[in-house]
Length: 381
Image 1 (spheres, rainbow, N blue to C red):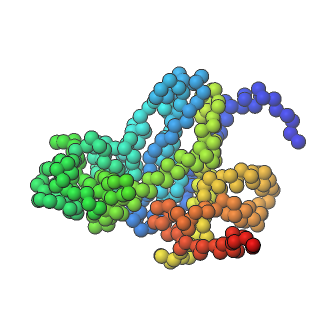
Image 2: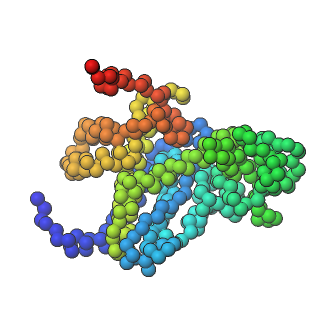
């Protein structure tokens, strides 16, 4: 019933005032998500929250190469994200040309005291590890290939001779002194040289694709090698979140040719994902409420991409409820039931994520369905 809007007038809305509006909406959504209780049971305990850092790159039309230069002859923008494991949601974001390196966008200072960091190789440096020690920040990072840690003490691992203090870890591997025979490796090492060095733990975990090596300052009395490996595997949550941004909120479908329009559409995508993540977290909290430790979950968690698709089909209903003079909880309850039906994770029993397993959101696999009941039996002769 509203008047028709011509295309030129619609495009004119994509200007700084709209950018400020969407940015403010996103900041409110982030605040609402971070106001929820944190789920940090089991090996995730001991810190205020675990934070994950990563970036995702979005290609843009070539008209924007001067504003957002990529690493090649194309235009692209990076979205740098800080993700909370405890709330399962976005904490902070920054935009930059895709050519920029990730590392400068992570700062370790007093504000991070008592937290934990899960960092990819793009953020790994000896100076950052030293900052974590200075501000009481726990961390788990992958060991860089060109780093040469020196062993101070070998706690776990299969060896063919005694290891002396100061021997290079890589040399021990090359000479088969330290054998990678399927057992975990746990050692105290020193990374860096002289004043620019840090003491930490080196963990080696066997996987089907070979050993993965991590550096951490988590205490041995609270976290064994496999637990350190499981905590790092939680870093995959931000990779999933990047997929949610692109597959659910269409972040990689931006065709805008003005920098302000690009930022508006990116903010809208992040807003979409943040709202969905907040609903996912609320369902996790409700699912755990009243259950004792070890008791299986009674209903599946929500899948963020499926939930976003369900929200898209319900946008008219949501708008109607928001515009009503009096709020009716029963209407919102019915809508949530619809979202649970359409947005639940169908693989929660067969393939739970590492985070779901740690948070106690798993259940035994269901019984196999009867082939005859499915109509899959033999046809009559």
